Every structure is written in structure tokens, then in C-alpha cells.
Amino acid sequence: MPSRVARGPLRSQGAASMVSVSGQLPAFGAVVLTGGTGVRMGGVDKAGVVLHGRTLLDHALAAVEEAADVVIVGAPVAGRPEVRTAREEPAGGGPAAGLLAGRDALGATGATEWLVGLAVDMPLVTPATVRRLLAAATEGDRDGAVLVDGDGRRQLCLALRTARLDDVRPSDAHGGTLPPARGARPGRGRGGG
Image (tube, rainbow, N blue to C red; front, side, top):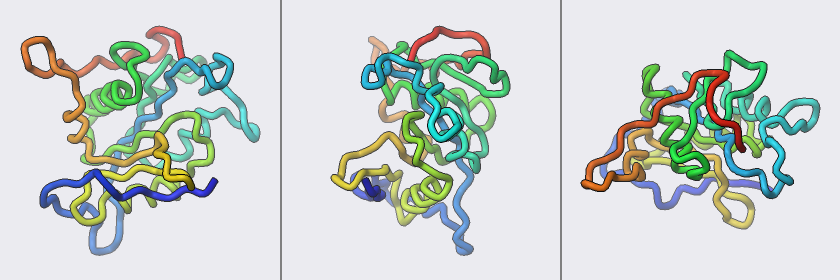
């Protein structure tokens, strides 16, 4: 199905646009989400599924190749020590928990103001899609944009101001926010996905 960029509800109060006069997009960090139980795919590891000669993880990493930094949230990737991973807490906590874990891992290396989040099972997303999404997100005073399919359903492919993730960070029992999740080292962490 064709997709389009939704420009609706993610709005800020008077923030300046990040698109320069030359039309250049801002630097961004990327989080590729590989978690989930894979129920729709029979429980297989989604990141390792091969489509058109490449794994879904390879497709996702190609889509965000222009990112200043990338982290994969999910199980460490066997045979790919160069790929940095983090785990969401709690494990299986869903996309918001995954994006928070990714943001926290990116923060350790100098986070950018913008973050692109992409589910690993979206192999048709390209660098051009990511650029379009960032252009829509940074237009005017928006805080982000999300990809929607031809029927208007939001997909797990989004660009947002990194700081907006604090709005969904859970609070502890005393009303304070929980500390950032710690990133896992390559080759360590729990399996899953």
C-alpha cells in the first residue's frame, strides 16, 4: 500500500524549524526496534528474516544510513559486533520502552535533537522515506511525524524531537522519573524478539 506522512498531533509550542534555509535536514540519531515476540511471523527472529537477499535488519540499517548514530533495541546481533544494542526495560515493554532505551543509549554518545525510530519489519522504508519523514517533522513548529499507510494507520516509522520521549518515560512510585535504561554491550543481553 502507498504510504504518506501524517503531520497531525505532534506539535510543539513555538519551537523553531530545524530545516535550514538551504533545505538541509538536521542531524539525527536512529533507533531500530527488533524486539517483540514475532507472533505474526510464527515466532521467528524478525531481524534475521531474509528478503531479496538481505536480512530485515540489513534493510532497516540501510534505511537509516544517514543517521549520526544508530542503536538496535533488542537482542544482540550474532556475528555483528559492530552493531550497538540496548534492551528495553522491562523486556517486551513495547515500542515506547524500546524508543526510550534507544534514546538513552544514543545519549551516551552525544544525542542529537531529532530521533528516527524504525521497526525492523519494515523493509520497504528507504533513506528517501526517512528524509521525507524528517522534512515533515521539522516543518514549522512540529515535534515529529509518523508514517501512515494508505488507510491512515500509523506505522512504527517516525521522526520526533528526542526530548519528547521524556513525556512517555514512566514515573517511579514517588512521582519522579525512572533513570535512563542502561544499554547492553554487544554479545550480551537476553534473547528474544
